[in-house]
Length: 155
Length: 169
Image (cartoon, rainbow over all chains, first blue to last red; front, top):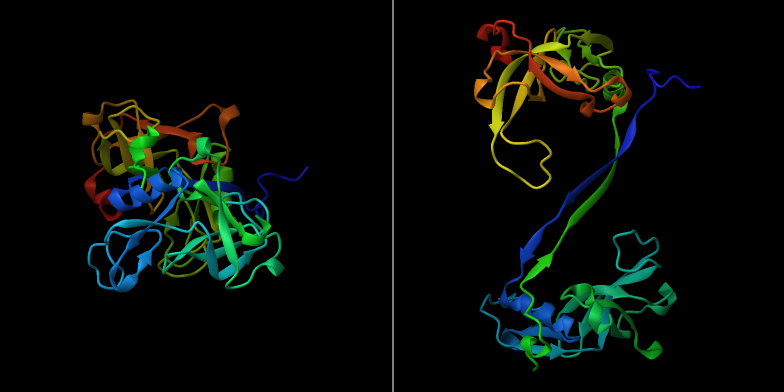
């Protein structure tokens, strides 16, 4: 039996840090999350024709307060993406997927989400995708009320 | 646009955003020796071959001279409270009843103080220079963790002279 006090034995142990933050979301993100719970995606109208998704309280360029919230999507186009081969326990999907910026129809900015495409060969910039919402009873006002996006032709 | 209340639910005002970081901690040689000492109810430190200071817990090198500290030293079970604070504020996950005393303890023979819990004395009785000793958990509960030291308690000896610990505040 190896000597547990052997001088050359280096100890290792799991070390988990967890911060259980809860934060208030404010009127604009609050409306966005409320929309998600209802199965709708909202963007904020800004200056120069911008529609920002997720909505921000202020225009990202002029810093003026955003105008009214408008519904966008549900479909959109992938502007850029990266393939995730080895999902971790904290990732939205347990099988390989793509991280993607999705410019929803009617929006001018990309929403960071995941695309369940099966293979990187099925991914391309400009491809059409649509959201797969969780069933109504499982939605809780969270970005992951959209389980993922899926290629439009496969839906 | 349907408003939130038409679904019979309040608009979303709060979100949970937990942060979870899963580390695997490697103690290194020096700290592994220290931790193994704890599982035997002993404090093991290391001495710098150049300045002869004794570090406990040891990190394997001297922060002043930058040389490996290879010389192992077993320290006393007793030490001196150099400074302390009384914790009166409850917080999530607190495991000790408040008020309690969190102190910097300089073991006899050491040149580095570490943090320890002081018990078996009223919070308003603790003082700088107070002599204390480690109270270990029962032998079957000892392990390579600071939890092997249940707490420190007063020895009843006269307080240490301020001059003897003023460098370790």
